[in-house]
Amino acid sequence: MIVAPAKEARYVRPLVFVASLVLSTLTLGAEIAPPSPADPGPWPVGFRLVEQVDASRSDTGSDQGRPVQTLVWYPAARAGQPMRYEDYLELGSAENDFSRTPAERRRRTDAALGIYTVLGTSPDAIASWRAAPVRASRDATSADGRFPVVIYAASDSSPAYENDWLCEYLASHGYVVLASPSHGADGGYMTDGRLPQDLANTRAQAADIGFLIGFARSMPFADTTHLAVVGYSWGGLSATFAAMADKRIRAIVAWDGSMRYFSKLMHAAPDIAPEAFTTPMLFIADREDPIPPARDAWPHSFITRMPHADLILVGMKRLFHPDLAAQSLRLGSMAKHDDTTLDQRLASYAWMERYTLAFLDERLKSDASAQTFLDATPEENHVPPGTLTSIRRRATSSLGTIADMAPHLFAERADPQTVHDDYVRKHPGFQIAGDTYSSWLSSLLADGDISQAATVAALWTTRLPQSGEAWTMRAAIEDTQGQRDNAIRDYRHALQLDPNNPIGKRRLQTLTSTPP
Image (cartoon, rainbow, N blue to C red; front, side, top):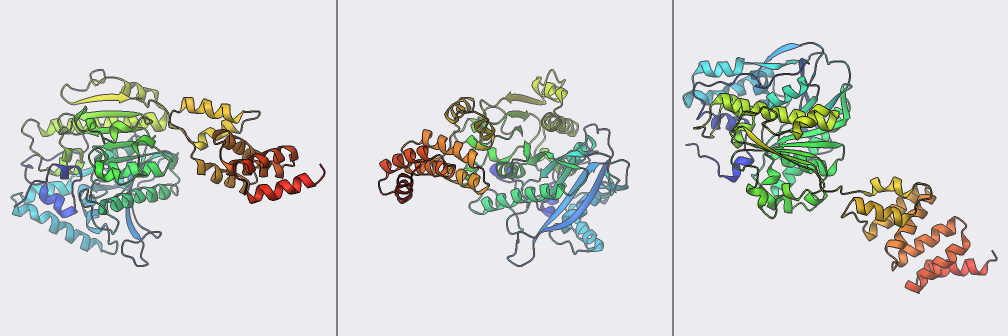
C-alpha cells in the first residue's frame, strides 16, 4: 500500500530514484507529457556529465571525498549526440557510485521502471517514457562567448535532472546550468525537517552549491561574475544558506522553497537571519499555500522578514507542490488533479519558466524588457486567467556592510563620523560591533595601511568614547606616524579610562621624557 505523504512532507519531496517512480504511477493514466512546454531560446543545448569528487569533504569518514555528480547544460554552437529521457533516468542509478558500468546502470534502471508493470502501467507506456527525446544533446560544441551561470539545487533527496525542462530551457536562452543530486551530510537522504540532522544536511547541499560554483570557474564559457541559484523545495532552502555565505550569488529563484515552511530549522541556524538577507529573490508558491498571506502571516515567516532584499512572489493557482518538478509532470504524481488537465499544468509550468527567465535576465543581464515584464501585472503579460498571481516588493532599505562603507570612509578629506552617520541614514540598521573595530584595525595594520587604520581608529573613539582599547590603538597609530602631541593626548585619555593600561603608561613615560 502506498500512503500519501503528510501535509508538511510534500515540501521536501523524498524522491529517492525508485521511490519517485513508485509514487508517480497512481494518476498517470494515458497522459504522457511532451518535451518542455515553454518555447526554447535561440541556442541549441549541449549536455555534459562530470563525475567528480569534492576532496575537501568526506561522507564516510574515510579518505574518500564526497561524490558530486555534476550535470552541465550550456548554449551550444551546434547539436551533438541526440539524447533520450532514458539517458537522464540512468544518471539516477549512479549518483554515489561512479564505478558502475553502463550495463549495470541500465540494469538498475530497468529494475526501477519494472515496478510500473506491477502497478498496472503497460510496457508500451514505459518504453515511451524512456524513448522520449529531450532538447539537450550530449557533448555538443559550446557556443562562442561566455554566459551567466545558474546552479540548480534539487529538492529533498532528488536527482539532479528532476527539472531537466527548466535547465534545458535556461541553457537555450543563454545560461550555463549546473546541477547535482540532493544528498545529506553523510551521502544519504534528508529527514524531512528533523533536527539536528537536516541542518547538517542542508549545509551539505549548500556546500555542494559552492563546489559547483568553483567548478564553473574552470569552464571557459561560464561567466561566474554573473551567477544565480535556482532551487526547488528543499533546494530553495539550501540556496538561501548558500547565498548567505557566498556573495557571488546575485539572485535566487525558489520554486516553493522550504525556508517558507520550516521555521524551526531556520531558527536553529542563527547565521541565516532574514533580517541580514540581501540577495534578490523570486519565490514561486504552489496552490496549497497561496500568495498572500497563508504562512507568510506567521510571525516566524522567513519570506516576510527580508527587508533588505528585493522580492517577487508568484502564486501558482493550478499546481500542487509535486507539479513544480518536470519529473512529476512527465511521469505523474500522487497529487489529485480533479479540476485541471495535464495541458493546463504544462501551461502553468511554462509560465514558471518564463518568470524565472525574466528574473534571471533582469538580475544577471540587466535586461530592461525583463524588468518591464516583472513590473507588469499577469494580465498585462497575457497570462491566462486563473493561472497565477504576482506581487513585487522592493527592499525597504539596504543592509549595508563595512566593505561597502569603507571606500567612502577612506575618501580624501572625509570626516569619519560624518561618513558613518550619512551611511547609517541610507542603510538603517547598519552598525559596527565593538570587537569588529579591533579586528578591522589588525587587518589594515597587517597590510601596512597605516593611514586607513588611523581613520578607523578615529571613528572607533568617536563611536565608542568610553573604550580604553580604542584610545590606546588611536594613540599607538599616531605614535607610529610620529604625531607626538596627538599620541601623548590620546595615551592620557586612555589612562583616564584605565589607569593600569600598561601600553599607555610605558609609551607616555617615553614620549614625555624625550625632548620633541
